[in-house]
Image (cartoon, rainbow, N blue to C red; front, side, top):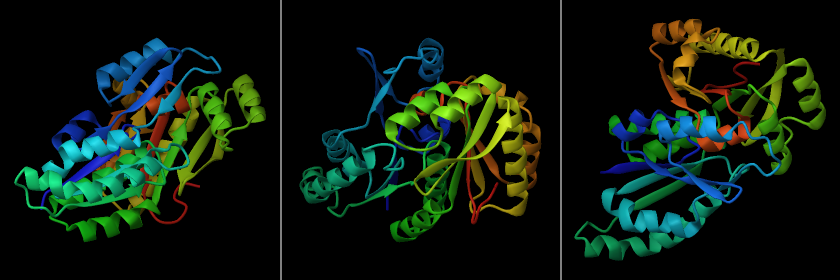
Length: 314
């Protein structure tokens, strides 16, 4: 059985990993004034985007536009129902984007129309589709998609993979350290979440206090505060290294960075994290932060995600 994976472009995974495993990316469009910019997870375009746009601090800097119901229907009925016999569609948490709702709506049309499409192409008619909210975002989405890849390569059935992913959704933890508080405050206030308030933004900007944010089961909240970005990153990497040594639910972690990836190895604590991962046979999937993620948490931010039970780092 040919099993495929579709994700939205908020899913932080390396481009070569996406290409190697034929992961289908549903682009998110960013509206910047009168300009429309597609986020297709192209590393060169993404780095150029950081440089060109993310130094602008205006109230209406960027609005994200997820793939529409009609675009998702077209993607599946013109391509995916022919390329695969079963597809897992993994999306960012529904609290951050409408793409999960769009995919759910589109799935009803796809599952009523695919038979004619496959029959006309001479493909056996049976096709299956599961739409799952990651209940997470950015690097956290990457953890789940990478596990789906691993299970497909092991020959897992759709039932086995679906059950495993639903279990994993509840155990995925994403931590974020912003380098600048402006973007994360503006996006949080617009979306009505409480990850950072006006007081924290103002005081944090004055005193260089950075929150460490935690996303888990659709909720994003601060779990720690530190003086300085590098201090926050070092604390995150050090605690993640300890969590790796204690054991994870899956043999990989995902890290994304809103800047040149060559800078990551020089961040404090990364060498210890890399050593712990190597000793524990845990892969580090390092990628540029998506354009969509970067307009939410700001340039230079770090996100790190893994799957583990309980309250892993705090």
